[in-house]
Image (cartoon, rainbow, N blue to C red; front, side):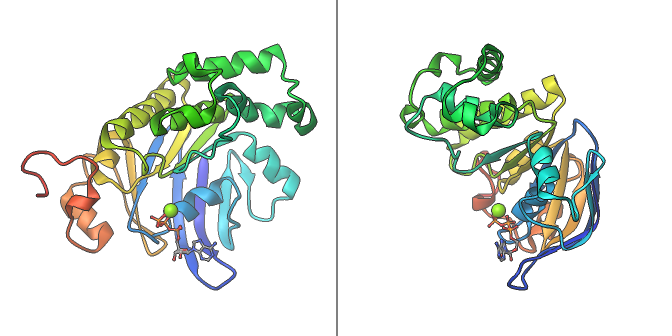
Length: 260
Ligand SMILES: Nc1ncnc2c1ncn2[C@@H]1O[C@H](COP(=O)(O)OP(=O)(O)OP(=O)(O)O)[C@@H](O)[C@H]1O
Ligand SMILES: [Mg+2]
C-alpha cells in the first residue's frame, strides 16, 4: 500500500512540485495519473521511489516511511520498485537479455553483474520476464536494433526481472504511435492483473487513461483535483483537470466524430 498524507514537494529552487497531496493506493491497483505539463505527475511517481525527496507531510510505501529514510533503506525500497520511462533507458549496445538482467542487479550485486556472473536462476527470471511481454525471441539481439515498442517491452521486462511490488511508469507510451501505445498499455495491464503488481502510470492522452485506468487521478498545479473511476472521468472532468477545453492533441487516437 502507498499512502500520501498531506505530501508536499518544494524543489531547491522554490518551485512547488506537489502541494498537499493525500491519497491511498491499495495493493494491486492500476492507477493512471493525468494532468497538463507541469501539473506534478512525474514528481508524484518519483516521490514513491524516493527519487524526489518529500519536503512536507508523510509518505509510506508498504509500511516504510520515506520521509527521513536513510540511503540504505531507500536503496532497499527501490529494489522492489520497477521504473519505466518515456525514453526506455536501455543500454543500446548490449543484448536484450543483458538489459533485462540488469533488473537483477539489486539481488545479484554490482561486481557480479559487471562481470556478467548471473546465476541460472537470474537468467530464468529474465527469460520469464521476456516471455510475459512476448519478445523472448529477441533475447540475443542488441537493444538498438529493436523498434520503440519492442524497446519499451524490454524495459518492462527489466522492471519485472526485479520482482517488484510496485511498477511506476512515467509517460511510457509518449514516444510511440497509437497502435503500439495501446499494445504496451495492454502489456502493463495484463502484468498488473496476472501478477497483482501495484502500477502507477502517468499518461497525457485521455483516451488511453480512460481505457486502461481502473482509477484515474487528475492533477493540477501540484494538487489532486480528481480521483475516481474511468467511468466517472468524462470530458467535463478532463476539462476541469486541464483548465481548458479538450483538443485533438489530448487523445492518442481520434475516433470518427469525436474531438474533431
Ligand atoms: N528538478 C526540478 N527542479 C525544479 N523544479 C522542478 C523540477 N522538476 C520539476 N519541477 C517543477 O515542478 C512542477 C511539476 O513538474 P513535473 O515534472 O512533476 O510535471 P509533469 O506533470 O510531470 O509535467 P510533464 O507532463 O511536462 O512531464 C513544474 O512546475 C516543474 O517545473
Ligand atoms: Mg512528467
